[in-house]
Structure formats: C-alpha cells, structure tokens
Image (cartoon, rainbow, N blue to C red; front, side, top):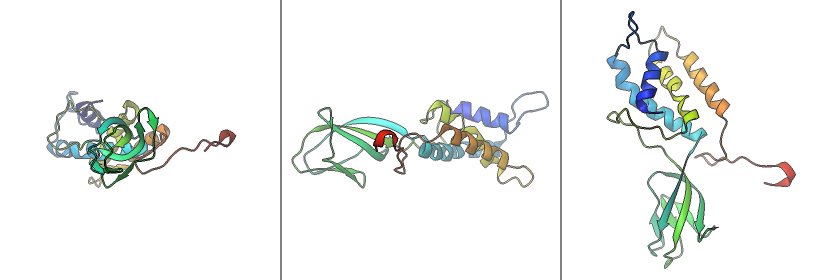
Length: 185
C-alpha cells in the first residue's frame, strides 16, 4: 500500500465527501496526515517487524557501523554459518581487531520516517496486512482533537486488527515466540 492509498482510505473513513460524492480536501486533516502515518507505521513495526538482510565487510578496526535502520540484529552469518562472535553495541558491530570477514546480517529494521514532504507514492515498509490497519490509526488521530466526534471506534478497530495479525517471531523490543512442543526452546 502506498501513502496516497492510505490517505484516500482515511478520507473515506472520515467521510470527507461533498454531497455530490467528490472527496473534499480539508487542509487541517491533510497537514497532519504524513506525521500520523509515520507514527502508525512505527507502532505497527513493533508488532510486525520489518526484516532486512545486509552484507557487511569488516574493516579490521574492531568496530564498524551497522546500517542506520537497524533496530536489532537477529542473526550474524559468516561463511554461511551462524556465529555469536560479533556483538551489536550502540549502532556498531564489535569484533576482534584485524577481522576483515564479510558477514551477512539479518536484522529488524526501523521504518523510514514519513516526513511532511514524503511523496504519495511512498510504499509502506510494513507488510500489506499490517498496512491495511494503518488508516484506522490515522483516522483516530485525526478525530482526537474533535470534542464531538468519537475517535475511540477507529482506534479500537485498529487495536483489534493489529491484535488479529498477531506478533510475528521477533519484535524490535526483543520478544520471541517460544516453541515448547517436544521440549524445544
């Protein structure tokens, strides 16, 4: 789903139509839209993490910068085998000096910030199922300052939809799903 698709869905939820059926543009609503989608996507990424893989060629200096979007490294692979010889600390991968290996990092990423100038063709980084929940969060945020309208219905729908997705294996906060069948952990 693109940002433009999400905005169109929010306007539909808020019933921003003229009596003739054309979408109306409310400058106040549109001014907040990108920031609200940014908050929604980052919230959703805690439940449905954005997974990425990157190659990292070590310089040999003992610590190299991780990609800037790394929230948590989930696996480091060297020569096709998982290894625990490397540690991620403060945005850097720490290792023994002199190591010039090429590693593969599997990590949970922070979604890019959706700024006010982000174009409508921006593709949400969370999966399609998760992206379908975002307009309900944004619609609720748009209604919070309105003392007459009830934002709770949209926010509760968002929470129900997010909950129905379930958490996937790992979260950016470090949670894991434990397999307890047959004593495996």
